[in-house]
Amino acid sequence: MIAKIDDQTEITSDQQDEIEEEPEIQADAVPVSGSLSVVGRRIEILPVMYGQKYGKDIHSLDISHNNIRSLENVQLFPKLKSLVADNNQIDDSVDFPPLPSLETLWMNNNRITEIKRLLDQLCQRAPQLSYLSLMKNPACPHRISGNEDEDYARYRLYVLWRIPKLRFLDSSPVTTKEKQEAQRRGEFCLPKTPAQIVSNVQTIDAQIGATADNQDGPSNSTHYGVCKYYYQGKQSEGNRFIRNQNL
Image 1: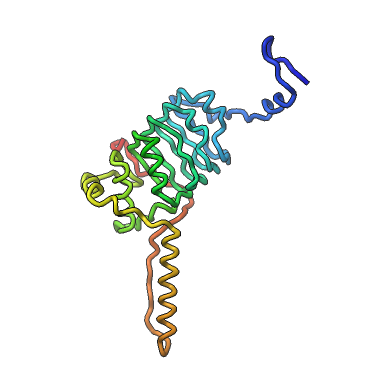
Image 2: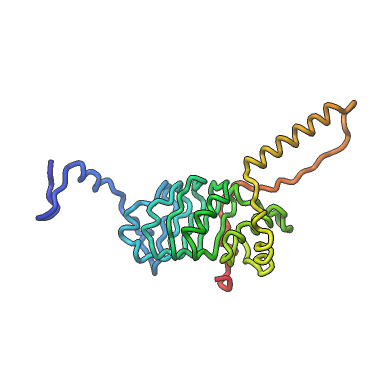
């Protein structure tokens, strides 16, 4: 069956069904002063209708607390300066869209394990990036409270070497000393991937097991270890450390 929308436009019954099934834009997703929030919808991809309707006017986009795996349709926001995509399912397969004006990116509590691949994309597609937070991703070593963990320090140096313009990384501002150190040795500080860490742990366990087998009797010594990686938390906290004076 063919229906008429106006004097010039005709649609089939199948197209009519698609129009009727298209989700409506909810009231809390209507932009306010250039900001758009599409939070907690359980969506796996940002619906194209948001970009088509509001994309040219939006500077800040929040798509946190969804099931997003792809950043498709985010490229429909050409003036975007801030993107918050915390607490989603974004992994190493993500194809980061070209966002030439992007300055702030929060992608905490996702599934990124290969930091190099992500940074390769950010360097090319988000050249103005100044604020970056990737906390609670497998690729980001957990910073142990009270100490500057060595693995996390190396991670920061590598990221700063790749993106020298950064002013804020994860939970703290970038210092002049860090920038200088990153230029000096950041190239050699690429963090190990979780797969490499697991492999190392398995090797150590095997060595400990072999040593125990060679002992004549039981050992009375006690062994302690520290877990240096935090893979996922209840909620993302990267941007709660930002204060007005940091912006």
